[in-house]
Length: 230
Image (cartoon, rainbow, N blue to C red; front, side, top):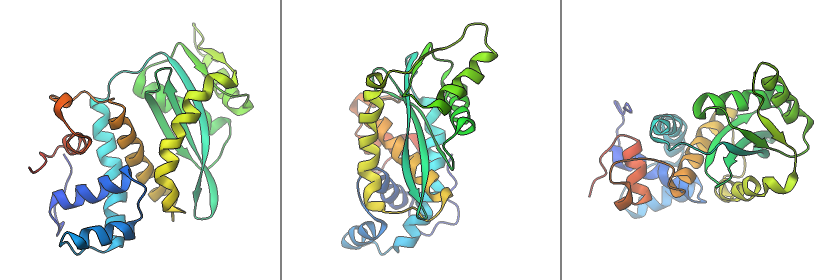
């Protein structure tokens, strides 16, 4: 359960603001103006603090409701600018396009790729096969994982197989584009967790009671453990 103790704004105001930020291509100043029009005076820096604090917690809570993914993964990484420098967002989807997992890293190397695979497999189980591009670092990470396995995971380095994950990046980049430049690695990781969460909600990846009748907003509130006000 999220701890909103000490917050001077109602829970639903906090959740509406951070959901909008994670779901749509908006800046914190856009949200400040939008809330002002609704009679709520909240500074953009306050919304920023809410996003950094609560989005990763909600994404973590949501994981226990995530539906299983398939055993055929497509893995790739993309660039995310943090404080003027490029960082790397590792992601994988299954062949149906469902998000497997994601990880923001400071470097793009074998160690970073292995951290991603370890996280993804720890949360989703081991895949039967992984498709990736011709990256030597990503292949080396899988070779290291396979070295300790009786039954190795099949690795396919065929670029066209990765079209699904490359197309899936567009939904993430569409939301991050107005953010221009994350000010810290922590804030980038926190906000990206929220963006990935909203993307998974849109793809129907969560098993919640009554989900068929729920809007995306209702699902977000439910995953946060809050009954959305009518």
